[in-house]
Length: 132
Image (cartoon, rainbow, N blue to C red):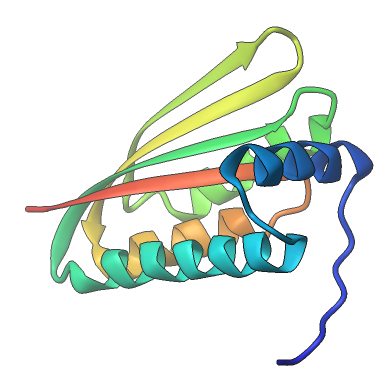
């Protein structure tokens, strides 16, 4: 196997270690391999949908990172052709929860998700697709 190196914030590593122990993984490597497999499987499922789809995209970010709001606004405008609704909520003054409801060509929505996932300051991105 190939050895890689990643950088994680300390609080995320602590949470990951707790998760790993609770789920019974015998090593960080095995837990990361499983996480990567799940992320790839999610992407594969999303790609199976063809044509016009509806999607709900949930995004969390750190409340203190004000720059994320500005970049999310830019992304919303860039993908105005598929984003039909947007909700922004604060959770306990610690997190921002952004929900996009999108409708349109699957490829375009996957591009939107890719842009969001690539943004600094984003903690989680979850998407659910439905064929129309």
